[in-house]
Amino acid sequence: MKYLIVGGGAIGSVLAAYMTRAGKDITLLTRGAHLDAIRRNGGMKLHYAPENADHLVPVKVAAEADYDDKPDVVIVTVKAYSLDSIYPLLNRVCQPNTIVVPLINALDIGHRIDAGIAGAAIVAQGEAYVACELVAPGECKHKLDFFRIVFGPRLGCPPFDGATEIRQDLIDCGCTAEISDHMLQAALMKFCRVSALSGAMVYYNVPLGTIVADPEKRAFLVSLCEELVAIADAAGCPFPPEFDAVDDLLTLSRSIDPNYKTSLMYDFLAGKTIESETMFEDPYRLGRQHGLEMASYAKVCNLFGHAS
Image (cartoon, rainbow, N blue to C red):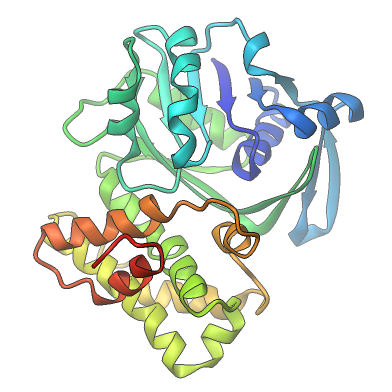
């Protein structure tokens, strides 16, 4: 299958490097200094932190204006607030049988993409579990020893042809890949890590270790996770009995560098635009729709003017 990754940020860059190393037909669409550096260096510099290993991967890159192919699969890794800017590209490259897989921190971004494009395509839903960072133009870092991708049809949509082949291609490049018919559940399970961690970090404006060490801050982190678990129960997609979201969150939090910050926290500290709407407001609204109080998410949302 022919792949196009739209978005040369951390996730898009790391995934493009691994898919290229596995011999897949993949083009990374990026721009500016990142595009120039990859071309100048002859590839993407990938640092795998758990083994302190560096690789130069000959990733094929293109600017949006120069890409004129018709991919079988488009993997979207731009930030949610930038989606409107890529609709002209999707309208140009997608055909009715093109599969669009968004890997964006959001609970239900597939429906937004489907509504935003003018042409026909198979728009799926996806979640990526990975700790990575774009450290410099042309250089990305895979920070922790996991890379899991869960994808599947959007709520109310049927399974689609090609999903099994995509899953195998992702497995070939080293990901743990799964097809799910319950993508809201998968998104909420991911948010129990990424949204809860980011929410606690921005609320207290501290790194992870400070939160873990302080009982009050740690309790707030846990409360964010518990509110997401309550949404899953109320929405009719409870987590599997063997998955204890709070235990998973605390085990992860205690096992990594106390100075660890999520990518959202890095952007927050740098004064950049962050995904506050999809990461915090959307869970808050969904919980309220199901009659939940969502007191902790309300506190985080208030930082950004999202909740009264």
